[in-house]
Structures are given as structure tokens and as C-alpha cells.
Length: 121
Image 1 (spheres, helix red, strand yellow):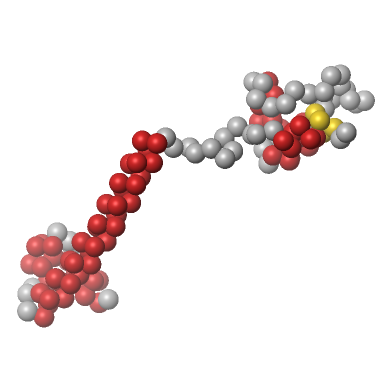
Image 2: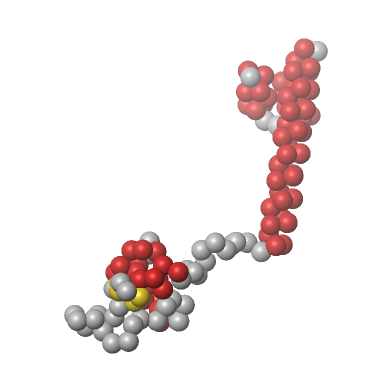
């Protein structure tokens, strides 16, 4: 059986030693072996540390409601892309019809700079 110090446990999980010790103090990490090692430091069973499901790893950070909201945001973004495409088409058609840039920009709800940039594309 291999034993690890808190330094080795923290390194395995890619966290700072203080974070590892916080997990231990809150009872979220495996308990140390009974009795300190020869140098007086606490040690842990390496297999238990490897098998331990670290808090937060593999879990979603957002709730179901938040995921629904993100889905609606994505759908809105897709709708906006379609509206932008349509605005560009109308802008090009307006240019072909001889409309002024400032009038078209105002009608489309965009800045003159945006209108000029879109016409360059």
C-alpha cells in the first residue's frame, strides 16, 4: 500500500495544499491514515485518494433553469443572425436603389459606420 503526504495528494488533484487540507477538515476528502508517518506528517492511502470524487468535478455548475435560459439565449442568437443577414440584404438593395446611407442606417436601426462596413463585405 502506497501512502501520500498532503503535498502529494494536492499535486495529484491539481490543487494547492491548503485546498486539500480544507477538503480534509470538512470531511470531504478521505481521512488520513491512523498515526503520523515517520516524519510526523499525516499520510493518506494513495488508492483512496485516487478513487475519491473531488467536489465539483464532473458536476454541472448551472441549474436546469439556467440551462433552459441558456438554450433560449442560443435560439435568440440564431434569430439575430438571421435578422442581421436580412438587414444586410436590404442594405445592399437600398444601395442599388440609390438610398442614402444615413437614411438606410436609421431605418435598419444600425449606425452609419455599421452600414458602411456591411456594404464593404
